[in-house]
Amino acid sequence: MNVLLLYPRFPKSFWSFEKTLALLNRKAMLPPLGLVTVAAILPQEWDFKLVDRNICSVTDAEWAWADVVILSAMIVQKEDLLNQIQEAKRRNKQVAVGGPYPTALPEEAKAAGADYLILDEGEITLPLFVDAIARGDRTGIFRATGEKPDVTGTPIPRFDLLEFDAYSEMSVQFSRGCPFQCEFCDIIVLYGRKPRTKTPDQLLAELDRLYELGWRRSIFMVDDNFIGNKRNVKLFLQALQPWMVSHHYPFSFATEASVDLAADQELMDRMVACNFGAVFLGIETPDDESLTLTQKYQNTRSSLADAVQAH
Image (cartoon, rainbow, N blue to C red):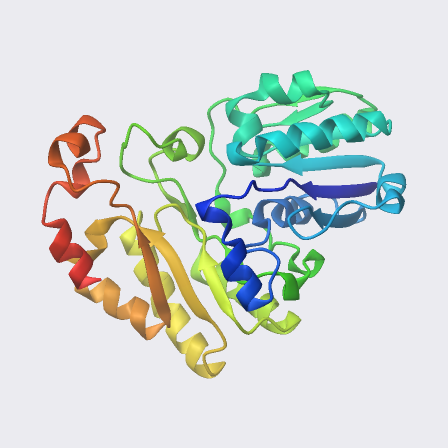
């Protein structure tokens, strides 16, 4: 089975950083971690090629090679996702889609021509897709029916499929889910309010693989709230620090976190000791009334100015 993993383009915006990337001589900020994780979950006797359309276009040879095309996208990538589904169908390819956008609005991907909808989290639904392929099914919708996977069983992503020189930063994921209830955020809808984490050894194995492949630059922990499970984060950082020392600090780290990180000096100290250099904070607004209205209560419990200063 020849599988073409296709990542749609992001439109130009504040978040596309094209001017910064040009200065760095890079083509994209972050790689498609979801697709290289998909490649690790699918049968390893299958053959994979990854095309990130933020780096390059799909060649005619790559289209011809593929037996099935798998796409994953966020809502901001909607236009190119739908266009690539249609292009794949024009070339008579079987098309499977997944990720946050198809999971949230599956009817749009289906209307564009997608044959398989691999929704929710792939640890559960990708095996259902593999079974359907084995049966010869030409279509299918695969859902997790409310259950969430134990991410301690998630394999090391297929980082070897990535073009390292094209990216400003690398991506790894420690946890999924967030304990808060901000009404504007779809994370708790997609991944739940109980943060599930990988084990320290599991994530260190991912870092070992990146080190083995030659990565020596910044790594972004893509968790939507890295400190959602503070106990497990501290256990991971406790294991990460000696790994960083023994490998002579080959990486720097950045991540996203809620502002209550400022209330835990021990956690901040451990992050600094592990070479975390930046944290993207979820402030949204300094207006308490707006924070309360949107149920972002964690930002109303202490001074946001003090929290920023502490970070």
